[in-house]
Amino acid sequence: MNGLIDAFKQNFIEQDRWKYLTNGLKTTLLITLFAVMIGAVLGFVVAIIRSTYERTGKMKILNFICRVYLTVIRGTPMVVQLLITYFVIFSSVNISKLVVAILAFGINSGAYVAEIVRSGIMSIDNGQFEAGRSLGLSYRETMISIVLPQAFKTVLPALANECIVLLKETSVAGYIAIQDLTKGGDIIRSQTFSAFMPLITVAVIYLLMVMLLTHLVSKLERRLSQSDRR
Image (cartoon, rainbow, N blue to C red; front, side, top):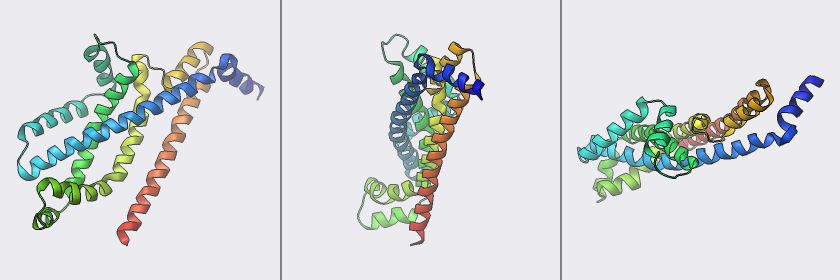
């Protein structure tokens, strides 16, 4: 017992090493929050372009660009994308590493959000489009007023799960020397030469955050299923 207390003091109390974890947690949450925003906007735009092409045959060039984007992003590892973004794309630009990470994770998330939303849009029956047309609505107005609200409700749990995945993926941000939560634990390990306590603590923090988000997603799914039965 005394050994655990001494290890706790050494890893977290001495020299205020606990701040590496709290500051790292703030960075992790910041990256996740803004990356989710970018991913959502980018994903919805790509999904609308792709679904419009599949239903109408329009936006052929944009659809081709979107398909290339989806193929490249979904076919390469997140770590490699992060390294390319920082060391290749922004190598000659004086830009914050945090901004680079947000862009890289946001662009990556956008590819997965796009496919989630596209599947939701394509799941809506063609009768909904015909109903919109019969009311005198254009394709764009039908999409915004009728289709997207229904599709969004359908894919909302999947989008929430994508946020959980994104939160965990940000743990590789340390590859470009960002002091996120994982990097904070690794810094403590390098100073105390004790790997067990700081790394287990990092794992527990991630686990608690994921459990909380999973609980919220489950509540959301239950509410959606209840509203469908009414």
